[in-house]
Image 1 (cartoon, rainbow over the protein chains, first blue to last red):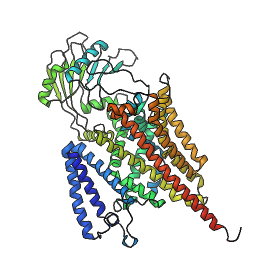
Image 2: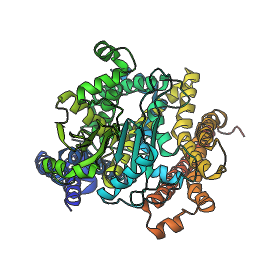
Image 3: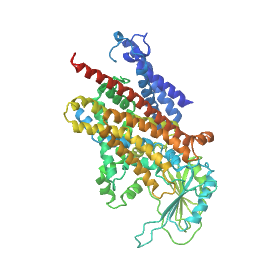
Image 4: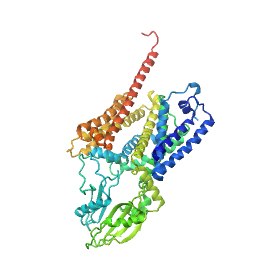
Length: 100
Length: 524
């Protein structure tokens, strides 16, 4: 149960890190415009979520295995999210900006 | 820095790829063993007392006069059966090696586990290949692996510096853009599995520390073969007892478990060691369950005849040793349950993909120049090695699994031939691109890999009772998982082959259009 919760929280943290970047926000949520405040807010949520994910992993499996599990979850979540992004429709050329 | 990253990465990247592929399979070594040996599921674990009594009966009948007995009760994935080990005393004045023996027993009945149906190297041979390579005499493979590990570490550290955008472009992957896509993929695979890559490479260096800095150990602990034993005894401690030669009684180790549990807590006894069993001066050592990562537990030493508690030996407190063993534990991942084990496998695959995309990026970056004639031999060589290794090695491994099922069971050298077939298949795949050309070879070998992996469960169905129809019905998900993983691998390679076929047709069409555009209007 704790590991499932840790997985969900870690995935949410990774997705929020992605949403903090202009290119990925435009791909995922085309109606939301990117700003520095948006990026800051996403990261402000993402880092505590990742910390909670780490805490839950350690709570479930102890420090040694728990931290290993967290990094494994983080890698898997990052890889899957990054591979799914190109499958989304591209934002209009006028809205494309550099990744920040 | 870029130069160092490029060449430290490229020079041995095909061996590094081999190490990552076989090392990743090493995380599933016992599961591969079961499939290749056709081992039925374990009967399960008997209670500690029953298992210990079974082991004592067997040792009393098979290993009388031994200097040491060891009893390993069943303990999950790593040791599903009851294990026993014994070593006989060294005969004074004789050059004969010390006689040793070990057996795997059914923990309920105490009977030895039947020999595997198929003689095979199994998953263990794949696992050992990742640090010994194969066909390399003596320690030369190990030394080469040590050197490559250093280069990998250099490549990783320089890679973090060179690809400085990896954190800013944390999720960036732009497919279908040629050279840029390969670089994106290389960066993505690297950054996805960066914690794993750092851990696996650094701990790999710790494995070979004795190889690179031997003088430190040799200067302090001697130049003979006992160096490692001397070092271990000093670090961990040794239980010493002289053999008297006078027979004496021996207690059942189970009688000592309550005393150990009173100090350590319930279920903390891991395994038993008995020194000089049946001698007047014997010792029974109870080993405590080790830390999951550090793998060091304490010990309690008892007099084997009277049960008197003689000594409690705590695990080493040396921080450097604890750190080193923890890193080795992380590298091997033997503590991982099924979910974490698959995360290890995924991280290993990402590392493998990082190496492969780095090698392909090297060629994609230089293709235009090479096709204009500059440095074409070196370029063609790298390209053939890339294709023949990146797709050819998985084809070789599929051939290894197929050989396991196809070679006659009674064939004496079948375990060796499984491996020969794997390497011969890989060799053929290395030669193929030189004959067939780049574009066709990627596609052809991908189709071959898809066909080979799809054939594994089919050949298994024809040659074994442990096929998908039975294993799924029996709920034996280890063996079913092996076949299903082969089918999934086949699907991935088929997907790659379909993509390459479309890409090849598109390139041909573009080349035709390009050639047509070169023809002056009105020339025909």
